[in-house]
Image (cartoon, rainbow over all chains, first blue to last red; front, top):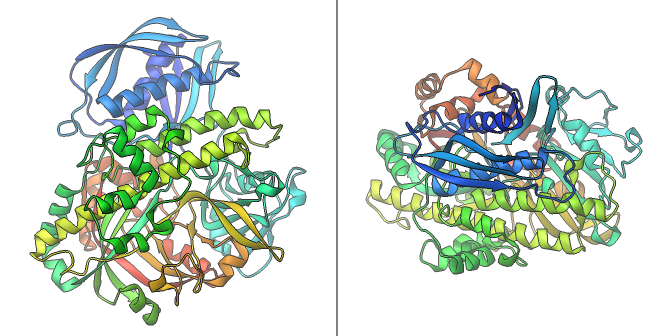
Length: 143
Length: 487
């Protein structure tokens, strides 16, 4: 898996993520995001579901909207079904779609300590790009 | 791009007012006006907030000025603590970023006949009961799971739906901004994903900077108005801070996507794409307003059900009915909202779209929207501080109507990032420090508690002092926390 760092933002949480591939970027960004939500992760994968997302708007010229849709879908499944993404098998990874079989653990609010509640993945100063080092993303989570 | 200190023009125009002249950027239609003293303005300069004030001044149809309150800090496109009113008749726009993700995040205060001497000896028991009764924290659902048909009614009616279901008093609606429900909400404009997120979150506090506090009125500045509001020196109050939960967040996200396309469609040239917007009178603008109103109504329903839970918990501990304990609602205000309101602009009455993003309505005495029971004194204005210091109750003054579209600040405003806060303190240290200062805190997330410690926030007393000295609102009393619940 790739790496991530947290950067300062006055009210919310900023993340910079590096991955060796776009799939690695997606998986690491999911890890980074849920590390802000959870102090304790589920011990094991409990269920596998397909996650499939496309860019939100027809104007998307890069992968940034696809990236945001990916994270938003994972946060939605956490909120509605209490599922925590832990393992990924990507079947399609851009530029127009992400499709993956995701292994989810089950979140139990009575057992798993939490940290922050994420309202949304914002587009504020969002960067998703490929460079010499692989793939890079910088994004801010609204808390 | 990291936040950068402001280097543009900033003129001290006196009276705790600072101006960014509209000559600063070619696109600016009006000046930027910031309410601050010399100490706060130095803090405000250090992030992008002032640049964002200037950018907001570029919105089509913006009236009078792009306004900033003394608790301002940078946000997404719009600063937090900003007010912007646009005139639809002049092509004025509405923007989801001018409201924020947490639509109708707001504050509610409940007074009581209890005194500090009644509550302090039993604070641990009271707080434990509140913590058990009020759902809070990540992933915690509410006491009632609503079917879609019920949720649609709730989105249309707001707090009224909850009161008529037996969870509140009729007077609660009179003492809530907009009667706890804005007309013109359209449940059909809310996506199915938002319904999924909202289904079991009514009656939940959430997490982050949301809270339930037990407070003591520890200083009264205006005895007559305090009496009119039902509060007194040494009296115990309860303050709830939360919003529209996942449903509101989803509505904002859905319509940000719509508005990005709409800005292009209507040829609106913006200095920051996050100011994405559409003319108020456009289909996109009307649909967003209808959905935003539905989400705002959800938030009022949420705070109404939380009120019922608080009343039940307090009654259980003290062995009397909520009526017997005098647990009346003082008021409920929104601080993230857009509303169509009539205002006097350049000698004419115009119906404008007032965006308050981290700003609170503050109407003066005599205004028809102030509840009849308070109309002789003015609207209560609830300004929460950080959990380690105090909050304030103010009353609206006429200068706010004349200058800020009847708006004032919303709270303390953060001075330090969460990341930096964690470098300073740990959750257990914060809890111990609060206890030593007579404040009992119960939290689902200790790390989250650490990020909310007092040092991470401006002093709300400084913020409120500026609002008062600028004549926008007047202090009625100060409230000291003795118990805090956080998710």
